[in-house]
Amino acid sequence: MNIEREVKRLLLENRRETDGHQYTVPSGDHYPYQWLWDSCFHAIILAKFEPVAARAELTALLSKQFENGMIPHIIYWRPGILHMFQWGVEGTSTLTQPPMIAYAALEVHKHDPDVSFLHSIYPALVAYYHYLERERDPHSHHLASIINPDESGEDNSPRFDVPLGVSPTISLHEHLAKRVELIDKNRECNFDAQHCMRDFFWVKDVLFNTILVENLRALSTIASLVQNAEDERLFKEDAEFIATAMRTRMFENGVYYSTMGPEFKKLKVETWAHFSPLFAGLYTPDEAKAVVENHMKNPDTFAGTYGVRTTSKREQAYRPHSENFSWRGATWMAEHWFIYHGLMRYGMVKEAEEIRAKSVRLLEKSGFSECFNPETGEGFGAHNFTWGSLVLDMIKK
Image (cartoon, rainbow, N blue to C red; front, side, top):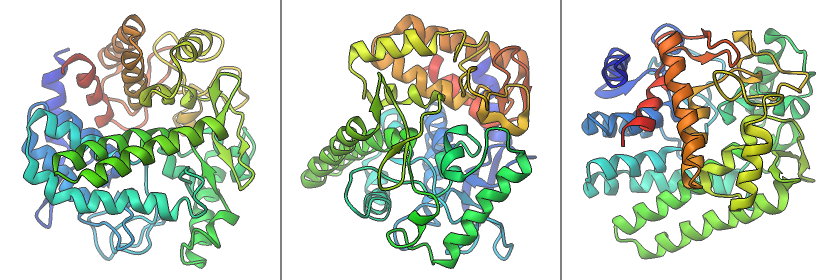
């Protein structure tokens, strides 16, 4: 397989234009809308061979930003149609998603420097990250909360079973119903984070905050490029505040756990979120080596033949075969991408190359599937799914 050629074909095939905005849908048949962190992934890849399209992707993403600064996780681009996640700005969802946009914008700039573009989107970026720090951390604990499992990017991950109030054996239909129920409750209280939403689902997620740390660092760099020295200092400082809070509130026995509620109760479910802090360098070198050797490379927990399982094989919720519970065991390319960059950050080149090789092998065996069985390599879920394009970022800089 010529991966670069296939990636270019796929991203062009999934390209759409609405109301003068150009964007890419993750999958034409399953996900025909624009999604927040998906578009960030698209921009990172497009920057390598079509930077104009990469900038258009981010511009479209920012076009539906809420007045309070939030960027919705879905833009439906079909005004007048009511969707289950909709609230606020017409044609968008009510939720957000892992905040990858500053990182993506900086990657685009690295491949095709354009300070004028950074200037044009800088106020929107600042407003978004200020929203997360203000509205999702109203008591200044330096950890951002998510208000629905969908905001983690991993809607049915078992690490959210306890705060959602469900069992590891819950059905797909029941799981979706519980998440929609959260939206109804939040709508009733007008999405008041400090006085209402925290009563229903208030989780400080490891992956979400890891991404926030690294993106605040990226935003600090962008601030320097637009010559705002004060913002450069403040965003760098904010990133380290969150990193410190994660160490204080989430770290135990060599790994990071998501937490829930005002008491920061650790959600001790073994998922690939243990490896996500590698992406932001939150482990010490010795801790990083230990988490890789003891967990990521352990065939009894996370190491599948074809990839890293999203949920440990030892968990009751582990289900690698069913697309309906794909975050409860299946392998995803975005998961591999975060782990790959984390391993490279720590100089674990051999391990990173193994992740890259398994990712390539999955594409060659099952094409651009949404996710994969880590034991057999079988692909399932959406077809022509764009996350497979992230493999290009592992093989071409």
